[in-house]
Amino acid sequence: MYRVMRLIRRFEERSIELVHSGHIVGGIHPYIGQEAIAAGVCAALRDDDIITSTHRGHGHVLAKGADPIRMLAELTGRSTGLNGGRGGSMHAADFGKGIYGANGIVGAGGAIATGAAWARRNDGSDVVTVSFFGDGAVNQGVLLETFNLAALWRLPVLFVCENNGYATTLTVAQAVAGSITARAEAFGIPSVSVDGTDARAVYAAAQAAAARGRAGMGPSFIECTAYRFDAHHTWEHKARVRYRSDDEVAAGRSRDPLDVLGLADEVRDRVDAEIEALLAEAVAFALDSPAPDPAGALDHLYATGLRTRDGNGLLDSAVR
Image 1: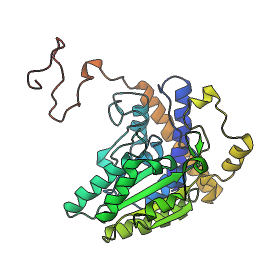
Image 2: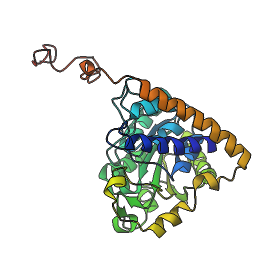
Image 3: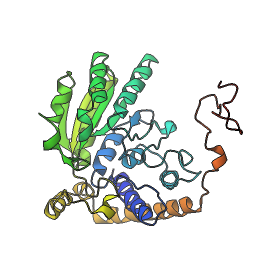
């Protein structure tokens, strides 16, 4: 889990550098400070289990096993990326790894994960699906509707709320009435709150929830409390938005998930060096890769491969 967390941390830091240099266009939502959640949850999953992610999704995608080299190429919009440069930061996916996509719509991944769980169960599989979402999503109607169906149908879904204290710049206290876990408990979903900076605690909770789902006992809900070390979005680095005091940020940063794990320095040094080499390779690969060919901009829009318009700007006859 330390290796995964270190990979996420340095991947995000290198990505921020590429945002500032202009190689990643549009910016990213850094996952720094929340690494233990992705690492702990995904360590409890099998290779064939499924996850859905969020706009702050790099950590989940990497923890579930996506290739970091191709992932960085995706963020830089290159044809060698996980999704050919089409998904970018907020829509990266790798179906072969059970990653059914990051999602820029708050709370939307819950319905996708629950649909996937329903489909797999109907196929006779004991696959578990995980929906990651932030504290801002617990007020979204689609997520509450999803809780209802998952509970009614006793689906093997693990709902993981990453409570980092803020929905963009709005505090949880200003946005959420009652408690976050009570949202799921109202639907009869067993819920727990754990320290999201402690990978071992997250892993234990996720392991129990996954076992419960595989046994046919239905969904579970885990609230993981953590602190977002960096900006909501790298746009803040230029805008200098002030909604957190320096003292608050310093206090939040004082509990670093990579330190909480408590590994010996020699182990950390060895892993850190390996991660540095991997990310140096990833950056070089991304920057040396070609951009997508604009001629293929309309490819992959339909499962049949049909293009929406012909070369004269008219609708293709098959589409008409």
